[in-house]
Image 1: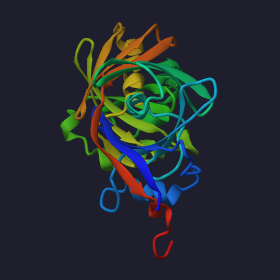
Image 2: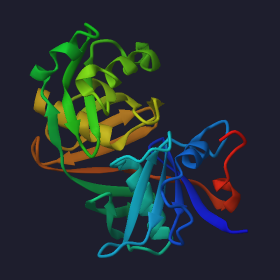
Image 3: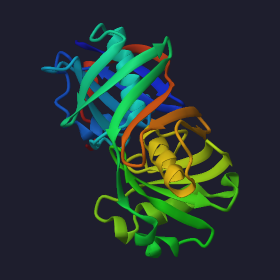
Image 4: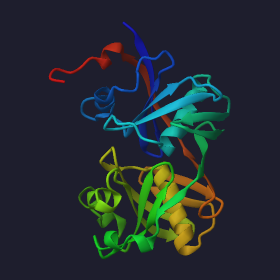
Length: 280
């Protein structure tokens, strides 16, 4: 019976299962299996899952899946954890060049538990002026724009203290808003703690709940603060899970995400993990 190596990690509280898939244990089409592994009552529990695989012209390939088992284009904190795991597996040195979907990224380990990820150029999908229908959802939440930082993120400036926001009840009204059909959007609630420091709560699509942090969301929030208030880089984004540092060159320039990563445990999955549950 084959044993499949895995790591359980988190990046600033955003947690992941990372599977060494160099021997091709998974094809990537096992949506129900990945969802079950990410389930907190039924599996290992995680916000997402990554397959680490060999690649040509890069050190390795990462394939990312949300907690619902569906593939997603990118995950900043997941990729940072993936770089650390790939380094531990001997796939790269302290500098890494890797592929996610059709894009190549670069990253480096800046210490035993800190990774800097170059995310490339972000794009603004919707400006605040294009979000009038979204602005009507809540009178004290002002849209600062939607940014694609690998995946799309709506940034909302809150006049309500973050701890008073019922994220699970309110965020789906934005996540599924008709303006963002059909794929929907991730939702970030932000307040300025002081110049250069944001406090954030985030609801992630595919996880369909609040997570302790989100890397691509942190970059979107920093870019929104730069555009709205003229803040220079770096900007620190504080969430319940920890603090991430976002660097950028202008509102449409190169971006980078730096922050902590932490190994929770490593082990082996039984090959029977891919067998269907009764009724599946």
